Image 1 (spheres, rainbow, N blue to C red):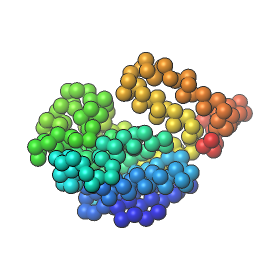
Image 2 (tube, rainbow, N blue to C red):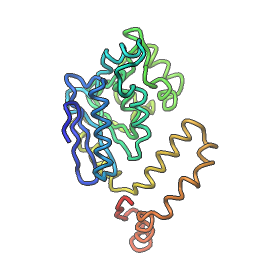
Image 3 (tube, helix red, strand yellow):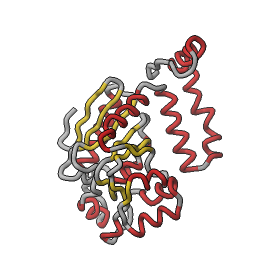
Image 4 (cartoon, rainbow, N blue to C red):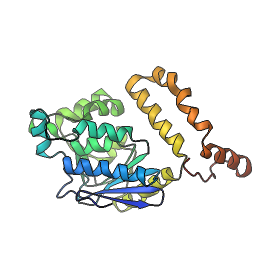
Length: 258
């Protein structure tokens, strides 16, 4: 599937979404619509995981001014609001791995935080820079930084508006893994493909329980856990996993995603 802003390509059980909304992948309706269309492509294609990457020099240099103008008005003209867009990513049933290189700031960071696993190139520069133009993060960045890094770091990032190196973001729990620049593509692809070859039903339930725990607390997740996990017992992947465990030992099952 080809879009002016996002290229979606199937790679076996994996869908690769490449943002190419020049010059800097600014968050705007074309880019958001392209990513959402790519996620629909992944589901329609039977993919089991998604890799989100940039084909440009930077991952994303923030949000387009058109989004600020819409926020100052009533939002008319936006088919999907930025917050609705990011919520759609968080609620997507398949794991999403994101590969960050170059600049990843403002709305670009909020986009990355809406995904499941973030790999960053060592030279990447990451931050919430909205304060430099008189704003703060408009698309949930503050609260998601609080979830991951705590209130102290979230306030530092949004109040000072600085760019940080990838290793600092990893220490602050905002990035999963930092790799050398030349290894980013291969490392992100390998992790996404590992997830794509995993137990898809179990991964979906994991995402759902994590979101409930983050939004509502551990007790709320405990209350629905058994109900959510009912789908596991009839899954083909569980049968494959148990059979493989008995015959071959742990970690050697070849799942089919059902």
